[in-house]
Every structure is written in structure tokens, then in C-alpha cells.
Length: 368
Ligand SMILES: NC(=O)c1ccc[n+]([C@@H]2O[C@H](COP(=O)([O-])OP(=O)(O)OC[C@H]3O[C@@H](n4cnc5c(N)ncnc54)[C@H](O)[C@@H]3O)[C@@H](O)[C@H]2O)c1
Ligand SMILES: [Zn+2]
View (cartoon, rainbow, N blue to C red):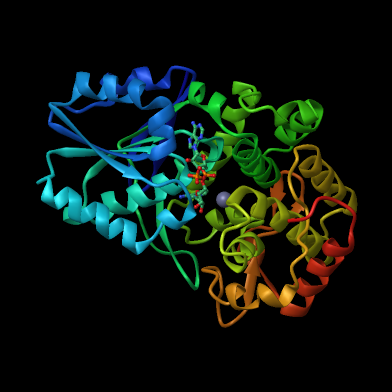
């Protein structure tokens, strides 16, 4: 089990424990002032691994209340947030409680927003149970709810007291959810670790098996995000590089009513945005081809069959937009993003984005 440090200016430093058995660190991070645990848990994660968590929580807290979250992106809603908050109020959960989030990115984003807003703020712990949540959603303090207009449009920054990323929980992930997490691992390699990218290429199709990612590689992917967040926790600039693939990815998710799950949408989004990067910031075509090949080896989509016009309204609400222009975070080569000179994001006109989308759509490969 690795212990990584999450620190940034304006944020209380906290630990992230990563590896099989990380849940055993619960007593080490539990504060004696927390009398009650409010466990906000994905229903599936609870069914598969709840006993292990509840046993450990009961050893630390005087009482444990369980708040189940139905699996699926639709739970990241104002309605679910309100229902859970009202139930916690009924249960008289007060500030002497710790909110413990247990599940994938959906549960962590929802529970994090609850922690940010309930009684104006409650301490919380993050216990991610999916690859995507370990490598991405549990790091960096972003919490969010979706609206029909788009993803993550309501939210807050709220950093946890600690993160326990127990990789032993990943063995039960269905292949689709596992591969979705691999998309964010690849994203982190492109954003900041060319050597990680090479190692992923070397491991190849082996990685498709849930639980097969080497802990050392996983830790490298986690470190890319930790380092970016440490330098710009509240996304004033640099942090937006982590959005590679997400402008198009989020629009694809929203346009399909989340039938394309997050990881798959980001994979297709990266393939399209890499196409733009070749045109706009000089990404070598060979690097784009390696990215597309790796995504396909990992069983991820690299294009979509839906018409570009269906993305349109959802591109309008992207949080990176400024002065009406769509802005993308683009790589200049594998492991390196367009930087401060361009303001970390590059304005791209709709026609260029349409060209890239249609070029990908016409390419051979896996579609979503
Ligand atoms: N806050 C952030 O910085 C951030 C970063 C990346 C992604 N996200 C968000 O994360 C979400 C996607 O997260 P996700 O891919 O984890 O999806 P998810 O939370 O929907 O989980 C995927 C599926 O796996 C199931 N599951 C969870 N743990 C399991 C386990 N151990 N074994 C078997 N099944 C299990 C869940 O029930 C669900 O059906 C998106 O909403 C995305 O916007 C947030
Ligand atoms: Zn993502």
C-alpha cells in the first residue's frame, strides 16, 4: 500500500492510501471527534463489499447510518442530493458526523457535494470502488451534480480528510466499468507521463481484464493528477489540462442521455480532440495514431456514429467556454499539454471541431 500526499495552497493537506488493503487504514485516519459515520454508498458496491466497510466503520464510530445511492449517472441529480440531505436531517446527523463516500465516481461526486453543502459542510472520507474513481474522481476536490443541460454544472470544491483507495475492491468490476477507468489512466499518461503511456502500450490487451493494472502503473497515473492539482487546485489555469477528451466526451454523454458511460465518452472524446490537436497545436500525427491504437487495444471507442449536430447544444455549456468560444485542452505530444502560452486551453471554432468529429466518424474502429 502506497501513501501519497495531497497538498496544495489553500487546501488542507491529506493522505491518499493506495493499494490492496487500503481500507485497513480507516482507524489511522478516523478522528476521535467523529461520533457517527454517515455512509453514502453505491448500492452495488455495498452489496459486494459492504460487510468489509461496515465492520471497519463500526470499530471506529459510535454509530453508522447507511444512505444508499442507486447505481447510475442519474443519481448525480438535485433530486437524489435533496432526498439524502433530508434523510440525514431526519436522522439528526450533525457536524460531529463524518460522511463516508463509498462507490464509483457518481457516488463520490454526489456525496462530496453533500459534504460541501450539508450544514454548510461536513468532514468526509472518500473510499473509491471503481478504477475511474481511484485514478480520477477521488482526487482534486471536485464535486458535482448534473443538469439536463449538461454534466457537472452544479458543484463545489470540497477536499476530503483522507482517501482510502483499496484496489482489492476492483476485482468485481464488470469489464465495461473497468475499461472506462482505463480511459482516464490513458488520459493521465497523455497529460503528463509519456513513460506511463509506453508501459500501457507494452501491457496492451492484457489490461482489459478487470484488476490487471499493475499497482506501480496505477500509482503513476494517480501522481499525474495529484501533481497538476497541487499546482492549481481551483482550476485557475493549469488544471484545465486534465480536461483533455472531456469537452467532446461530456457533450457525447449528455447528447446520448448517458447511454455512453463517462469513460467510453472520454475515450472517443480524446480521439476527436487529438485530431484537432494535430491541426491546431502540432501534435504529431504518429502520436495521434498511437493514442487511437492504444484506446482500441483497451476495448475503448474512438469515434461515435451520432451526427455532430446532436452534440451542438451540449458544447455550449462547457465550463471552459469564454467569450462564446469553445476551448479545448490539447496535447502537443504524448505526455505534454499545450501550456501557459495559450492560456492552457485553445479556442477552437465549431467548424474545426466538426471536421475532426467527422474524420473520426469515417475512420475504422470501435464506435459508440
Ligand atoms: N470529481 C472528479 O474529479 C471526477 C473525475 C472523473 C470522473 N468523475 C465522474 O465520475 C463518474 C463516473 O464514475 P464511475 O465510472 O466510477 O461510474 P459509477 O460510479 O457509475 O460506477 C460504475 C458502475 O460500477 C458499479 N460499481 C462500483 N463499484 C463496484 C465494484 N467494486 N464492483 C462492481 N461494481 C461496482 C456501480 O454500481 C456502477 O454501476 C462520472 O459522473 C464522472 O463525471 C468525477
Ligand atoms: Zn473524466
